[in-house]
Length: 69
Image (cartoon, rainbow, N blue to C red; front, side):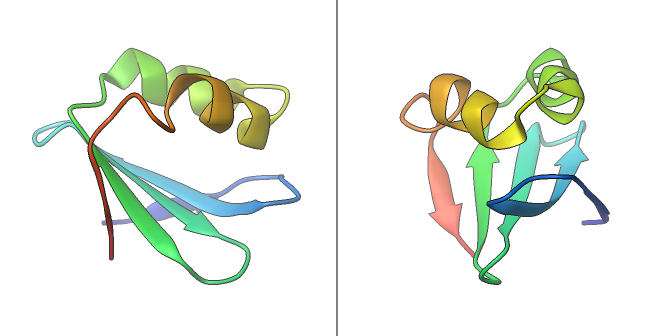
C-alpha cells in the first residue's frame, strides 16, 4: 500500500485502500499497523486533522480491528 508522509511527532506516513477499507499507519519508530473497516471519511479526516496523532488516538485506536504488520 502506498503511504503519504504526514507532519506529526508520532506518525510518519498514512495509507488507505478504499477497496478493502484498510488504513495503514507507519509510526516514526518504523512500526506499521493496519486498521480494518475504516471508512474513507475517517481517512480524509485523519490526514487533514490539525494533529494526526490526536485524531488517531481519539477516533481510530480502540475503535477498529487492527494488526501489526
